[in-house]
Length: 136
Length: 388
Image (cartoon, rainbow over all chains, first blue to last red; front, top):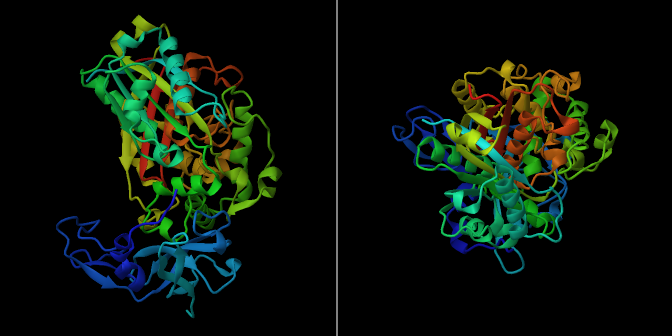
């Protein structure tokens, strides 16, 4: 099986993945990722707009992946975390620029722009946000 | 609405079947179920079969028609259900509605998965389709990783220990010793689990259910017809399904599975039963932490006490609430599309009193809990020896 996708498949998500853009609902004041036209709390009554997150947050939970899926073999072991952004939304990505055992629940992190993986030999090189430890 | 009963069960051995593909697995389970019910093919009016990812595992989709074709039952209508690892419980949920509605009187439900024809990380990739592909798997998250995130948080919030998680695997391997259809017939110790290779911290290899091939099938009929087929029908007292966010990361609390709570509350209401009335349960121990979380969410203990529950021995056969008497996903095996139906096979064998060395004495009411993804789909069934 190949996991290579068309350029458009990735291109339409560039704003979210390159710039950490999610959503803000002006009705319930919730922030969430990714972008959506429907607020998960208010549904169609929400007034949802795009929002660019600051990229600052804290590790909510984490794990070190040692058996990788296709395309991530070269990165093992790597840390994946659920990060709670300072606005309240949560996202998933890797935590880099540190040793796996330095990542703990609650440590402050900030987003950075990194390569995610290559899609096979002829596919795209995919980029996006990861996180790194930050000063609190 | 009509009540529903199970009058036939069929299951293959779970594990690596080098000589069996989808066809052989489906026909073995299907024929066993039909023979167990004492019916013939012409009695069957509808087939509903679960398969999570036959397309990625063996390149074959359109498994509804495939079920009917392979069982020689054309032109009986067929439906494929897909809800990741809960695919065949959704088949049963759908089949129950078909009987309840009065439209059909004899339905085959079941599920199949053929997972061992692909190599290691392709299976990991296929299973990752059960999570949020764009926002979780895209960044390199795996399924062991999803449950490791839950485990890490459960340990942090409730003090659940590494050893308590290992005890789930030890118990389920012990139970599987008495299940001839289980993938593993090998006792393990807590030390074995703690010394097995790390897969996704804190989860180790022996915390993880294995990749397997297998199929299971059930024959369901209206309760008022059940005695026509068998002296020991098993009655479906509740059938409930609930949904939650596809991504784990969007949920406010990842130490609980909200869809389990929604589904089981609905199921207890349908059955008129409470957690204390359940004599045994098959729960979705895809990873050891999930049995701990499930026993809490199903009401067998308080939130955060699941680790202590397994440590106390209450979930062993002979304990207060035996859990995963079949060996569970951990030791019986987890051919994902077949797992929900296989859990129900265990419920039926227990309630008929045919579970041999793993029999729960005096079992009257059993509960099956099947999870798709990280809890994006949960199906709960409650079954009883008695109709009410």
